[in-house]
Image 1: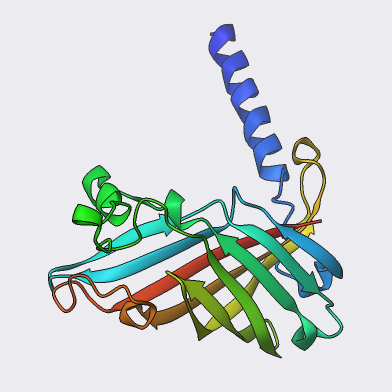
Image 2: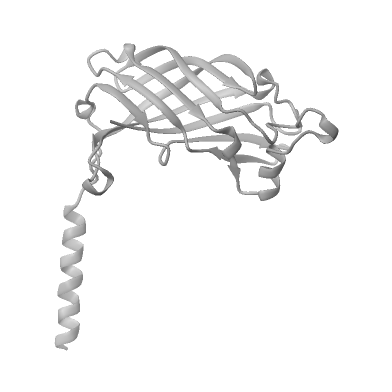
Length: 208
């Protein structure tokens, strides 16, 4: 009986401690500090989704994003972002499809998608139009050797100082969405059986 009572006390203490803890990120934009931030490659993801044969959406991910964000909370329209996305590290739920995305062209021909030596993609902003905690971010996307303008709908996600075990870095995060037509970047394999429209869902974290 005493053992059970002690266990209940320990569980209650653990629950109280867990409840008292809070995530360090704040939804209050006042937590943002200005300066130059560096992309957190472990927590910045570009998720893409295409229609597959009209039956279902199919999703893959680009990770290990690098780059910088220059941010002045007093003048959000002056923000500048410059990020690089390693296409060669693309991942999907299917090993076969991932291999196809990165497969060299047959008999020395052009690859179906990115190819074995896929160049990094790059997004460099050209304008930011902020309204409250949202913004239209327009920039040039270079992908598959082609550069075209893209506009993303971005929303402030959180800011603050990270935990001590992660270096106590000032961190700011955003969630962004957008849509591109892959044929405009020379990636037309499978269209229209596999959709031309690519929906982008981006989680971006930056530290300083």
